[in-house]
Image (cartoon, rainbow, N blue to C red; front, side, top):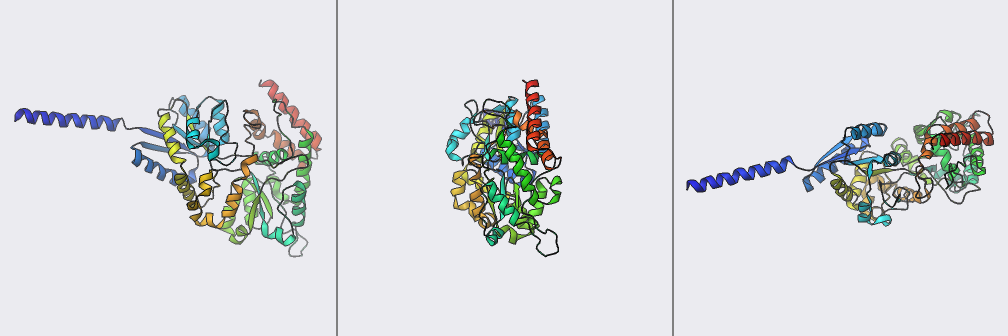
Length: 438
């Protein structure tokens, strides 16, 4: 009997040791999440994953401005996150640094290109997929469909269309000799926003920063035409656009002070719905108009992406989480969670768009036609890091962010420079930079 008791006790102790050791070695998954207003959504999904798969998921929420220094510090310490939910431009920066693991296995598990709406966000580079997009945020025009109908105007698809509409909708509504509503607002301050807007216009006219051989072509006839067009369009914008960045476009549209504006994502519709529901209900979205030398609408494309960091502790678990998160049913829960926070995301995943469940949320019900239409706008988009398909062009975002392009546009708008002179000056600066950084 004593021997039996000893055996039983020994077995129990061994079991406790095994359980304790197993608990101590419980898998961990670290996620760097860069959408603070969506923190509630990811924490809820992380808790669900933890419960289902017995994985300790830790979510670190940071603002997008802090992403690069945060990841750099973690990499230097030898402890990068397993997964990052990060905007595309920053993701490609990490790729260029050699910090990312390929995620081809995950994209192919989902169904490859066929899983997504046409988009530049997941295209292969060096034969691998490195980023997995969630949703889509191409630059576009938001416009007052009701005012267009009143004036007998069609949705703007060309430069002539948008100029005609902007002129017709710039009006003194109360007869006091002052303009009460302008035709359009756009970023014209010395910010990245202006570079994004201008390059979308230039790309839609067949202009580029670099040609496919990597040569600077910013001073091309197509770019010069775009500068002339922006100058002409500015006649029908509020005089304060010299200070306008993203949020000014939102504010003026929501207040009914402009008939059109430019913005990525659906924030203009979302904010207008909160402040002036009648205007939101009467609004629609359009692609960036095509210029006389262009063949199709182009826009600056971005969105949030999953990415896996090289040197992390659990890269395989990172893949499994991404596969789990990207399933249509959970993506719909994610989009509904974002809507609960008051925002509207445009899905880029075909099965999500085809699901009746997505459209059960009140915001998706109200703006269903806008969301469906906007989700198609990425088909001819350009991600600045990949100005031409399949080829990384890291210098393009440099010129968009270092004010080279912004200054060229401002010199035409406010400095009295000719489009030819401004384009030539910017191109010379670009060529000098590229020669120095060969």
